[in-house]
Length: 196
Length: 176
View: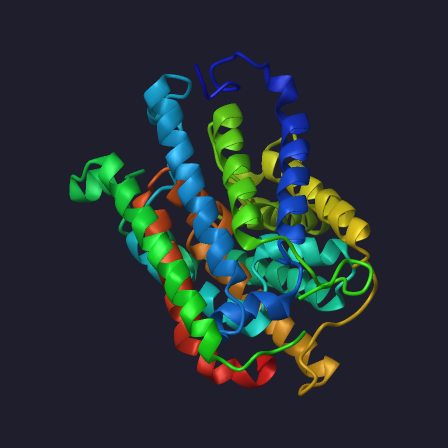
């Protein structure tokens, strides 16, 4: 019964080794999907390349279906998984700031690491920028603390928030993803091609 | 389009194939560790470690750094730092196999390298700041949050993409 490490089926000593192994897979897949190119990533915001949307939503749909299917089959206990906590205004304001950073810099942290690995100097500068951003946040922590710690709603899921059945949420999410893929292909045909 | 890796190093995987494999990795990560992936966490640990090295008393007195500092261990000894090292290795292997490794600044032909680097620095600062406020980036909060249907994960995802689309107009010269 998973998760394996928290339940002691694999010992804690393997934790860091598994971390590196998972990281290698993660980095390999991101780079092979073209996420080390800021111009490809930014394409999603201008309609000339929807790789971000397709990879991101396919990954989200596959993972949520897989996790709940493994729960259904009894291999994995969903209630033991770490649920990202919801701090309402932190999530909204932080997300808005990250969105501006995304479209200005052309990377998010994970993709910038991939670009760092293949020698993109703009990504090195971007990672430096992230560290400066973390530094600014930490130094001004007392100023940001109300929003960082405010409006804590707990480690809630959509089932807690809306009282929906998880299987219907996943079904609806998958439908939205497929519709989004179809729409993105239609949009891309109308937008001027850009080579990079 | 008949191109292969020998003539064009910018041929990437089919996005659905990449997304499918990424989804499998996320399932595997939750199955093994009970947690999701992350990326900005490693950079936060690096900043904490640097500040703790340069100015230990300042780090201990700061309410944010001190959350991540313990007496017996370095702030770098976290799961996310090892995972980020793996990301670097994995991307290096993939880029190496496809012939994409070289030092360069990638930017639209309409802008200068300097402009690209200035915007990369500014974008990085914004992303670093936002990722701390939201307690995670696109990997840690949005993608891993959505995998377990976390409400916060969905809100963060909507906020990131919504704001990026809203502000895309102002940065269009950099990209198109």
